[in-house]
Length: 155
View 1: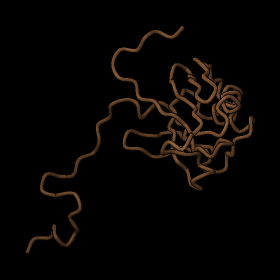
View 2: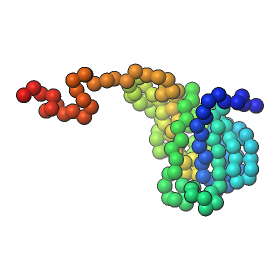
View 3: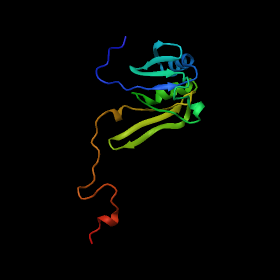
View 4: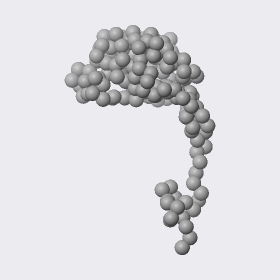
């Protein structure tokens, strides 16, 4: 049983054509655990992070296949992004959309890659480095963001 969260919890619901079948895929691909299943709506958690699957019923949202575009970009932060992505790809995800690599970030290296799940949702999976507070570089005091080199030259 998960402890009750303190403060806000942000989550998402992904539109899928068959929530129960999709829940089985997420369990296999990501180790998702089912919280509850109402048939057309399923609550899941991955490592304590909740998310939901729902079957649209002409209620203002739809699956990526129905609208012919991605409808969400899901960001996941884990200790081992390589293993998380490998498991999803082994279960049938398309790992070619954003191959895992090291990205330069203001705080150093951020390892991230992604996959497209069989339902059309884009998942980006990275290390936990963006979850910490970092000092970001600031421009010199006499330079405004967007100022060109010509504007900085003395007259």
